[in-house]
Amino acid sequence: MSDTELHDFREFMKEREKAATAYVSGDYSDLSRLVAQSGDATFYAPRGGFVAGAENVSETYARDVHSFAPGSQNAFEILHMAASDRLAYWVGFQRALTNMQGSADPIPFNLRVTELFRREGDTWKLIHRHADPLIDIKK
Image (cartoon, rainbow, N blue to C red; front, side, top):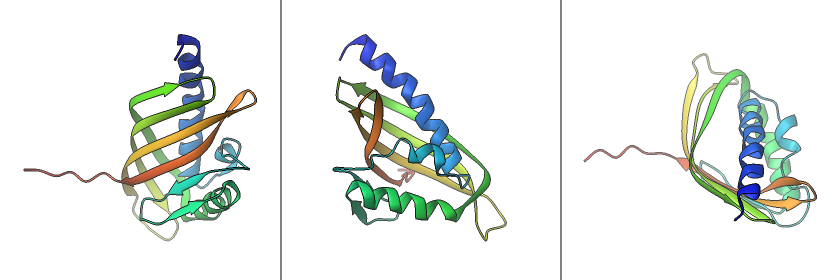
């Protein structure tokens, strides 16, 4: 991994986090530009299950965004990331306070997240997202 590749991916991650914030506020437009539209892709959703194939994953995100309402907050806590000339990833937490359609009170989301990206032309495309609840286990 070169410093240039990692710098490029760090810059891209600012765009990725902005797209996630828009998504949890009910807007898929930013994320739609970052999601792979063809080829292999997978999504392991926070409540279980999975979706495979870029078209199916994109359709799932487009459908599920309607559960969210404007005004949500979101932040990524990146534990580590890496990038090469063709593949990149980040691992960490996504913490959001979301306004959900039909709910009067905001709902906190604390997720463990792994995302993989592949280089398509001059941009990164999301090809895998695994998100599940972060459970605080106190001993």
